[in-house]
Amino acid sequence: MSSLYKKNNRYYLSVQLDKKRVTRSLQTDNYEVAKAVKVDFEKKILLDLINGYKPKQTPLRELVDLYLEAEHDWRPNTLKLNKRLLKGYLKSGFPKHPTTKSMAIRVLNACNNWGYKNQLIPKYESIPGGNKYEARTRVYSREELDLMFEGITPKHFNLFVQFAYYSGARSGEIRRISKENIFPDYIVVFGKGGRRLVKINKQAQAILSDIKLWDYTVNYVQLTWSRNRKRLGINDARFHDLRRTFGYNLIKQGKPIYEVSKLLGHSSVRTTEKHYAPLMTTDIEEFVL
Image (tube, rainbow, N blue to C red; front, side):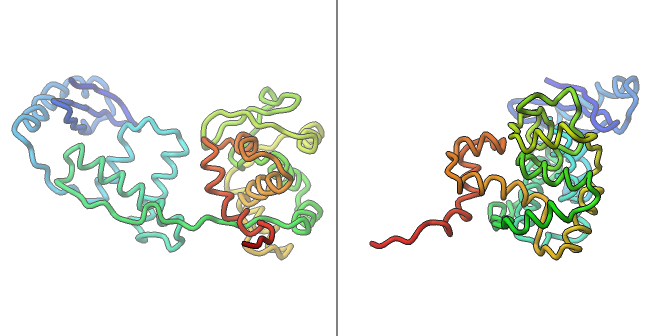
């Protein structure tokens, strides 16, 4: 069984025989050329599968390019993440930050596994450490939130920051909200997990009812946030910490973790527990055994 498909302006041929599959680039972006060479490529791949073809060691840089160009049914953000981590590894090795390093290890292992299954490399050893990461526990105090809401400039970005906190949404979900996706008590957003509904409280509703909607790039958000937090003297502060503070404060107020999980758009309650358990441990009241 074989299939011809196009990915990133390149045609690929995928051939399967007895549960073994090999995918190879046809090195063209022209459909007529791809059709013309398809038969010869298919014969060669089938012979390799039948005769137990042992692949040469494809250089990692070339393997990464083939992996990123192949069809994975990824969302655009997943492709961007894989590209950033793999290209970063090729340039500078593993990141120093433990969590980012574990992510890089996971995508590198996935790349090598794909190369092995597609007979681009003869073998590989899984790199350990893909599940080792430090859960970030930074949340903002009431004083820090007040300082942000009073001092961040320009005003349009200030409201963006406030809306991020009051909604608990990710920056990527609210940078470009469209009018047709705004409803009385919720908004429809598109981001890391695809399409989802975000419940908004009266504070968030008030912001949306009184502004021109945002149309920010990722770089604008990062640079404007960095400039403001340095000027205000707020240390170890990331934009995503607003979302963590949103969830943390809801749990402290007694909101059931199942509801908090839904408000955050987590795939399961276990995800919420994993992120918030380290935070809540320090809030356990004194006890005697």
